[in-house]
Every structure is written in structure tokens, then in C-alpha cells.
Amino acid sequence: MNTCIIPSELVERLVSARRVAVLTGAGISAESGIPTFRDALTGLWAHYDPQELATPEGFARNPKLVWEWYAERRARIAGVAPNPGHFALAALEKHFERFTLVTQNIDSLHQRAGSREVVELHGNIARVKCSAEEIVVGEYAETESPPRCRCGALLRPDVVWFGEMLPAGAMARAEEAAEHCEVFLSIGTSAQVYPAAELPLRALSAGATVVEINPERTALSRHAHFVLPGAAGKVLPALLEKLAASA
Ligand code: BV8
Image (tube, rainbow, N blue to C red; front, side, top):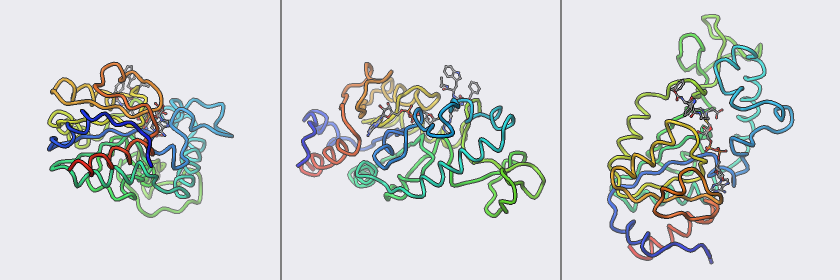
């Protein structure tokens, strides 16, 4: 029996909502065993600042170190599975006319859990692109670290680094969903990185009910209508259970 408390007023708003938008961060993948971004530095990486490594300057300074940091994270992601939080979000989709899942995560766990409309704001660690031509490269020989594109330039992860623009299409879809939803769920994010962190505030300004699911308080907490203090893997199944019972 899930003991998470879901306010009945929130359930009522969800029952009457036609469009829901969601923003997830590293916290929803924590229960799958993926360290959150801030503590993603284990072992060799313990003395590097992720905001140093996840930058074009960091890659230019030490491409081998950055490539190997991503290779290690990619290997870790390959060994984990979606958790009940991911599966609950995939199941929530069918309760609404529009359900847009915007993620800051690069781990594909939402797609692997069955979520259909996923907007990846920060790219995906499974993809690699040419650092000069910016095109995704499917096949490449790992003869050196990092490997090179046929054009001779270094290959890099197809993720958005600090100081880089987000994919225009992804941000536009995310903003549209935030501005036209009745309920916005912010799940497992410290709400510190922009422009992603703007999305719940846009939803708030557009009149949506904003809900935060996070064991800790964040910069968003004081703005949210509902703060559900718990792990996504516990709170989301409880929310789904209440909604299914009320539908
Ligand atoms: C851009 C991909 C235009 C790579 C990432 C000053 C003010 C405002 C903004 C800026 C500024 N200076 C610079 C900026 C812009 C900068 C920014 O926002 N910096 C911040 C640090 C201040 N943003 C950018 O550069 C973006 N581009 O703005 O372009 C521009 C260009 C130049 C200059 C200015 C503007 C690009 C940002 C994208 C960076 N790429 N990821 C990779 O992964 O390697 S960001 C990375 O960290 C993640 O993708 C994520 O988006 C971000 C934050 O991580 P979270 O997901 O929130 O995770 P975190 O660890 O922080 O928190 C986890 C949360 O989960 C915690 O709250 C925890 O309590 C909770 N939790 C834990 N367990 C659970 C849980 N919750 C639920 N259940 C659990 N079980």
C-alpha cells in the first residue's frame, strides 16, 4: 500500500485537466541508480566540477577526459532500468488529452518506460555528433579517444553543454506545453539550470496549477501550489493510483 499523501484538491484538478506538462530532472533517474547531476562525479571524476566537464571549453581543453566521462556515464546508463516513477509517468499519459513530458535528462529512461511524447531539452548521451559539422554520426571506429569524424574533427556526445543553446524546436515545444497546460508537474529537478527552470514559472504565469515532486525543497518550491515531499518512485505511483480511482 502506497502511503504517500496526495491532496484531494490536486486529484480534482488532475481529473478536470485536459492538458498536462511535465519537466523532469536527474532526480527521477536516481532510483534507477544513476547519480544526480550534482553528485554524478564518482571516483576519477571526484575532483572535477561537472560544470567544467559539460562545456565546450572543457572539451576543447581535455577532449579525452570529457569523452571518457561520458563513456563511463553511458556504460552506467546501459546497465540500469526505468523505475516506478518513469513507468507511472508513462501510464499517466492516457488520462489526458495532451501530455507533454519535457526532460533535462539524457538517459532515454522515459522512452524505455513507454512514454511517447518526450521532449529532450539537453540531448541524449546515446547519440554522438561531429564537433565541427554538428551532424549525428551513427557509425564510428573508436581507434582513439575521442574518435574522429570522417571529416577529421573530433566526435562528441550529442548533448547540450553549459553555454550552448538548446535545440530550438525542443525549447519551443516545451514552452508551448508549459503555456497551454492546466497542470504542470516539476519532478526531480533542483530548478537551477536555465532555460529549463523557466518552464514551471511560465506555466504559473499562464495560470496552471504547478506541482513539485522532490524530497528536498528547491528554488521552485515557494512558487508551487502543491509540494509533494517525496521520491518520484513513490509519489508518482500514488498519484496514478488516486487518479485512476477518481476517473
Ligand atoms: C543556455 C546535459 C544560452 C549535459 C546539462 C546565470 C543565471 C542564469 C543562467 C545562467 C547563468 N550563467 C549561465 C547561465 C546559463 C546556464 C545555467 O543555467 N547555469 C546555471 C548553473 C546557473 N545554462 C546554460 O548554459 C544552458 N544554455 O542558457 O544557452 C546561453 C549561452 C551562454 C550564456 C548564457 C546563456 C544549457 C544548460 C544545459 C546544460 N546541460 N545536461 C550532461 O548531462 O552532461 S545540465 C544538467 O544539470 C542536467 O541536464 C540538468 O538540466 C541540470 C540540473 O540538474 P537536475 O536535473 O536538476 O539535477 P540536480 O542534480 O541539480 O538535482 C536533482 C534533484 O533531484 C534534486 O533537487 C534532488 O533533491 C532531487 N531528487 C533526488 N532524488 C530524487 C529526487 N527527486 C525525486 N525523486 C528522487 N528519488
